Amino acid sequence: MPFLDRIRIKVEAGKGGNGAVSFRREKFVPRGGPDGGDGGRGGDVILRTTTSVQDLSHLAGIPLFKAENGGPGMGAKRHGKNGWPLVMDIPAGTIVRDVAAGLVLKDLDRLDEDLVVARGGKGGRGNCHFASAVNQVPRMSEPGEPPETRELELELKLIADVGLVGLPNAGKSTILSKVSEARPKIAPYPFTTLYPQLGVTETDLFGRLVVADIPGLIKGAHRGVGLGDEFLRHIERTRCLVYVVDASAPDPLGDYGTLRAELEAYGRGVDVKPHIVVANKMDIPAAKAGLKALKREAKSPVIPMSALTGKGLDEFVKSIRSLVSGLPA
Image (cartoon, rainbow, N blue to C red; front, side, top):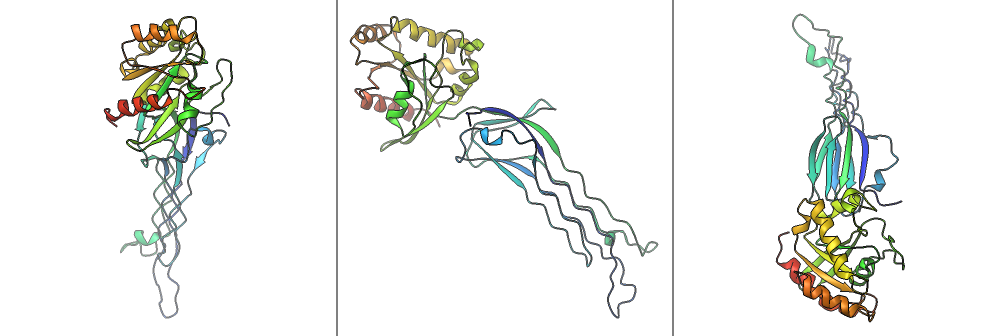
């Protein structure tokens, strides 16, 4: 199933169980009185962030997510069974909105975080609660409360330590495959990456680094051109950026300028994130001139590298380690 980072779903909690109308019937106990028990509470619908899912595609195509109803009350003042809650796994970084109210319920940006999005109805009271001096044989009970229902919009913004940004075919996917166990599609034509890819780099000094490969940007991406702003929002949660530039291209400096301009136009602070520049494809002779131009004009460190051959890869990993180590979580 393709990567899905935005979806609308309907959720419904469980209905409360009805209270019981019952009277004690026992040998040698005449007129035992009312003993109808209360209904059980309906189950809640809960969203929980976890590492077991990477996007929202597992929620697609399901018309309604419903928790279990509460059980009815029984005689002998027995309480009905409470309904099981429905716990739905979502990736960390998901923003939850109530569609009808137009409000953000919560930004679930941490792992193992819970949010109750629909509360189950309370169980109704049994007739034992309605006995009085003037009504010693109550034949009434309460129905269970109706469940809470909601239509939700879930929007995922990936959380990563490092975001790889670049024009199509700059070599971002190859870099990701070299520094992690991720296996993105790699091909010698543009737009092979159609959705963000995550990889994990294990380092002795800094531990685990999460690297995100953002699909290729082109001029006008902030207005939705190409894959555009559908994926620019995933850069918002990365701690730092790596601008991947094809140093063998006809105008590497212009390509770097295009990336900077698109991020500035998009705003939301992505253009001021700490970053380094990777001059990729240094195995091609024409890349030497591009590297000189980038080092001359770029206002951040420039790392020469050939992702294809692996030359410069160690220096690249050390650079992102150093960059990330000085940043807040």
